[in-house]
Image 1 (cartoon, rainbow, N blue to C red):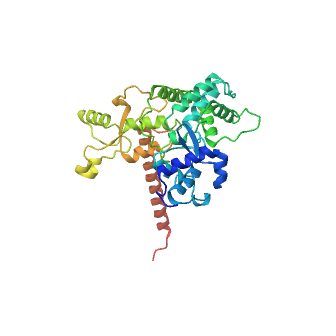
Image 2: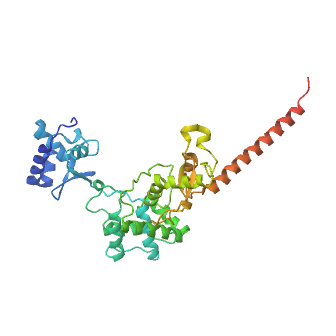
Image 3: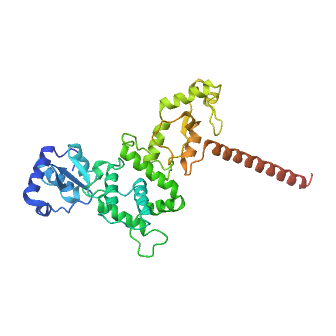
Length: 351
């Protein structure tokens, strides 16, 4: 089936036939199985996207596509239908993210590390809160997305991974254990993280912030939402400009506070006035209040990357100590090697 072989009119005709025959009759007639990946949503009803795309081919090209002639995923049926303006949603709920598990784990901890039932008001409240999270796009959410039953199930997954639990484990994911261990090791800090996430969701503080933190070199146990807000502040041209102006007005230079790198010194005019800003306030402490210039550190791109690379993040000062120690170790190793070479040279027979 070539790209663009179906039309919106052909899809609408396929939907009409689907409605007339019913789901089972429609799938049986054309040899399709129920969708396991994506569903087409039209006028409040859901349809098997792959089957609809395959049958739409009949109205546009004279024959229906066999199931083995196309896939139902984003490379074929779902993508084509979306391009024609139809709404496509995943038939499976997406995996739980760290941010979501943090909120669920916080709830389980408050409940004494015991599971909660689907009709518990706290579970219902969390379900509504998770549905407000901007992490998962609408097309990946199905009718059961983070409903109270799913939230209650996640509390079971977390509970059975607690060290004191003696029953049978459920099939949770590795993040359940990671977040649980974070709460056990740093309960006060993680409680504050959960509070910051909740506060941000209720206040709508995460809406519109690019969630572009998929890079493996950016690590934060506090989750994607707080990290995204953190990076959004760091990228603020206005804040960065005020910080640079404040440093220069005091007679300072735009050198990295960790390694001392000066862009102008190395790159000349091209580097004049350039340096990055790092927000030094820990994520679990940084609310939505006004960012003070004292919260920002001037730092080069390399050191900025190294700070964000692995949690817990060092401060620029701590990174500077680490760099100085590395240089000291290298100099010490060089002296030892030099002495060893000299000693070996003295022992060699003279010709």
